[in-house]
Image (cartoon, rainbow, N blue to C red):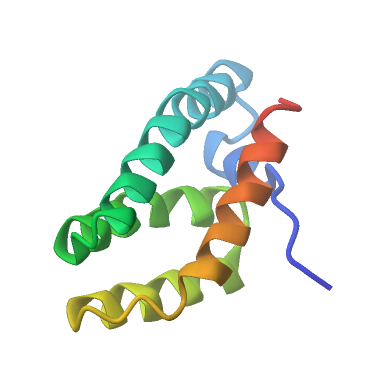
Length: 106
């Protein structure tokens, strides 16, 4: 079964403060689509250093949305990109697409 994004960690971080929780969500909703687009452009252009930097930027969002397995995959992918090896791109993109679908429901 694939990991499903959720807000448990954000709720825990906010300590029940709904305003803070909404700020976290707004930040993710605003930044994620832009970061995903830049990630895809860099990957397509085989700019692996820049792709790696975008994986680094996206990684905390995986953590905030409770995707621990996705976070671990991002760590491995980041390391692979250091050596210009994008073999985990398909799995990483699947995670990003799950996030994208999820944040549309928020």
